[in-house]
Image (cartoon, rainbow, N blue to C red):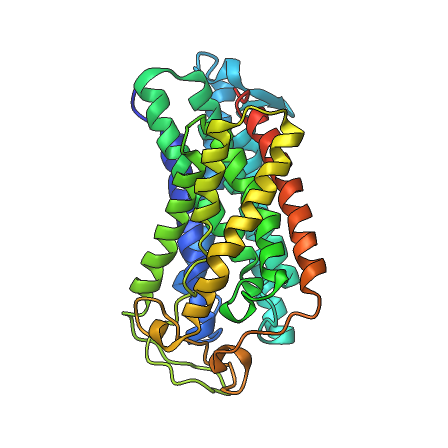
Length: 370
């Protein structure tokens, strides 16, 4: 394989990046301005990612089908007489799902107004489509990487880390309502992170076969979220819907990201030193994830709620326009946990289960060739 990246890998990088930036922008838009039109730049960026996925996947399928000398023909599957990589077919399906979600979302807002939660029914359809095109991007890169050698393999590995880091951003965005600052002294936040973080980190780290794979992925997520926090507050914005309870003069960014990089480092250290059977290793990794995350995030959450974090560096005093001043978030108080012991035990069980799943998926992903 040639050393330079194939065009469909660049397309995968572009489409996932467009979706991730668009989703962050859309949430910030809702927090700062409200929903004023479907045709916001944020929505266009999200749908552009889906369009790129659909067009690039269709082109890849058509060229593989009708050009019998295509280098991808031996590494393709057949669906309804068409040939192409599995990732291309999945990307086309995901793109169609994203496009279908757009009029559904517009109708939903017209009928019911603003979303009460991030995962409303139309957003769940959109999320399913986004997940499909993101996984499709990973599969296309993986298949090419697993067939490559030398410099081409290394460059494809770098592309895998970029897309993988963006998938971690998407996963953490899906549980955003559970990981707000006011919730970080409740087991609910750690249970939510235990359900998504270990499987993403371990699957992609195992697939990359890099020593510090989980750390690189978590570092990308952390750097992206901090960069967006510092960037968005520099652009003016004001609410267009009422009632307005917070004074808004600029885009409200998402909160400072949870420190998942610490358990990611612990994951890589354990994986380097322990060569146990998968089940026993998952027990250690799950416990490691929860212990290290709680140990670092619990006191750091206290700092984020303190006056020392109420600045542009940590964004401790930025709130959506619709939050009442007496609510927990603007009051800088933690929500009460009614069942902390049971919740933490559930988080431990979730971390062990998703660690095991991540190890299984990672080994399967190493065998992807088409």
